[in-house]
Length: 132
Image 1 (cartoon, rainbow, N blue to C red):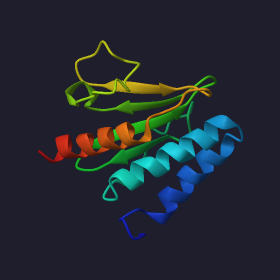
Image 2: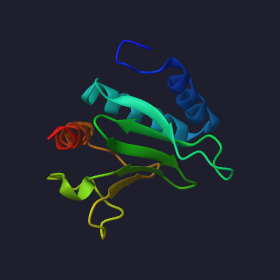
Image 3: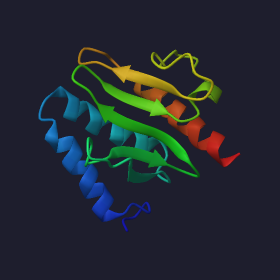
């Protein structure tokens, strides 16, 4: 285990997932990952939903339940917040999966500029939601 309760093997597996994308997507996922951990150091990284079509699984950040997942697509990096519909989003970061009763997502494309401060506030709100 590392200093924040991270399993070194899981962290290395997420490093490997990030490294598979040697373009803007890998760099963006790495930057988002860093913002998540900086916002709430108590968050634990996990890999979930391994299956034959996705043997690497999905990087997932948890703290008393799922905070968000990170998936890479051809044209975007998608962060899906498990309880996004219950979170305050004053800066309007959520731009995908808006119709559901629970989840919300942020699709980040290559040219998008993400408000890091607002994103980290959203991460902290998700942690708070899970803990209360």
